Image (tube, rainbow, N blue to C red):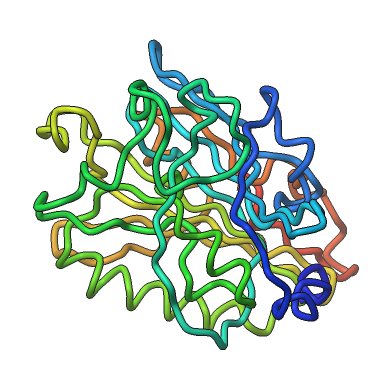
Length: 285
């Protein structure tokens, strides 16, 4: 993945975790969206969201942005995380962080905990998950990272939602592994992964909304063709469904309006004698 090559040579440098609350847009991390265009998203009434550019910075204050998250301060879980797929060959280290900026602190860096009593007002804390019976389900998983820095950056509580442990450790894990095989031959692959909140289920510690469903939209660029696929689960059998991008969008319409890759144009009306460009990443097909 050519967009990630520059990160690999930096993996031996000492880095500090950080993420940045964007000013109502993703301008500093737009490279993680196809053609620099974030999903078109309309939240339900009364639901507040914040765009976050997830990044790391080194001891020379050089920032490295690694993925993007749209976070709901109402539900205290992410709506989605967007990233460039990478083929992994690294281990995992879960050092969980929060975002002090979401709760009004001036501290720009991710921290294990905040300094004021208001921490947790707008976000989930590690303590919310303790003895809850839920796993921290990653939206951007370690399995889809290509370097040590991206792996570290995924372990922020703004990139996870409460996920049932059986689904997390079985069907969803198998799905993540299958995606790795599907996308590894792409020239580039853009991924948007999100959750559907269960607003009727008890909240963790009466604060954090649990995830009812997880979904994923992928767009593979190969040989000048866009090829997309959608995924949604668990279904009634506890598995992950595979469906078109359009059908995934329709499934989510009851909760919120979203178009995952809005920069993809509708398929042109091409004569049959000419090679047909494949557009299966847009929401209209």
